[in-house]
Image 1 (cartoon, rainbow, N blue to C red):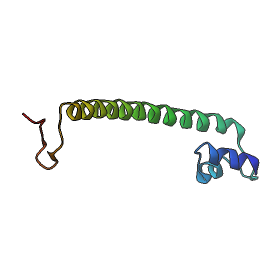
Image 2: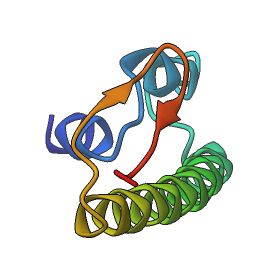
Image 3: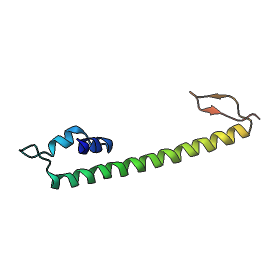
Length: 86
């Protein structure tokens, strides 16, 4: 039971765990390692995606801060016409 809780906590589905059982219902331990490595690869990809999202958010925040510092107050989102006052 603890193994199932740990696997679920690590983002491994019950279906994946079930596929690792042998004919006697015992866990096929040699098959566990590739499952763990695949999960690590997914997490690595997600970390890279989130790092890019963070960079994008920082850039937008920086641009918004500059625009507000220049006195920008009104913006039409549908036209992208966000200009600081003249």
